[in-house]
Length: 311
Image 1 (tube, one colour):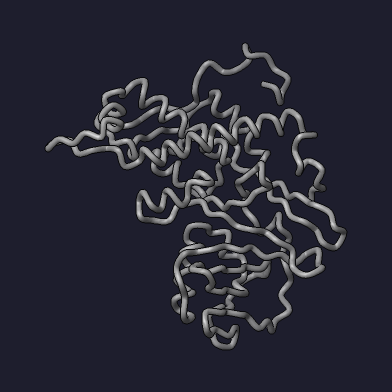
Image 2: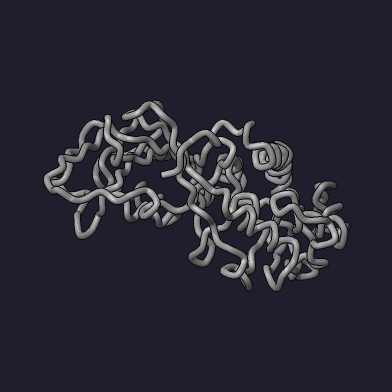
């Protein structure tokens, strides 16, 4: 309403989302469907324009931002998501999500940096807890990244290093094509270090052409999020969807919520408290990020990155 200078009366009198959970759903399996037109769609279309990544241009010692919009509402109509699916994509929950479910989250922190003193050379830095000691073990780590974040399939692997219990991987904005990044002719790999030895003159692509939208609006876009049915959804729209399901849970299925917080177990009804800490962490994240978003959007002078030039 504020972005469009509209009155409250102009909001559509519907959610634009439906709770389609089974009557006996466990909390992780609560499910919604995005459909029609309502307040969610209006919110999403505003939030979609805010996704960006920011970096320092060392050629001119100036900050720059790249806006990479997420999907408009018309492109996500009919999509169905569970609470499990949604929370797996919320930035900042990845470590707790992995401890809760034993699998990698579908959001991961990344660092975008220019290389050297060039205005067109960039690398994306990612970290993984697994160690590598040869090309095949490194390939497994890289494949996991690319399976979760397909955008990385277009970025060339150039370096990796295992230190302090983490593997750090660097991808550059160079096309992969038919290149075998794990061949002996492409890179050396020894003693926990992988380093490419470039031999071609491939042309670098621009960030807008080779990078999906990134999450972490307030901090300048520091997370990659896995797409949903081929489209990217705003981090704030994901938070909206999670809040909708949780509010529906406590309002219309209080017996499921009461069973979860009581941590009770019966022969025919096992405990359903697995996600409680993850939900609590999500609500804390939401309480912090949404007020910051509101302040920065309505008062750009409070947004450090609003001074950045778009490229």
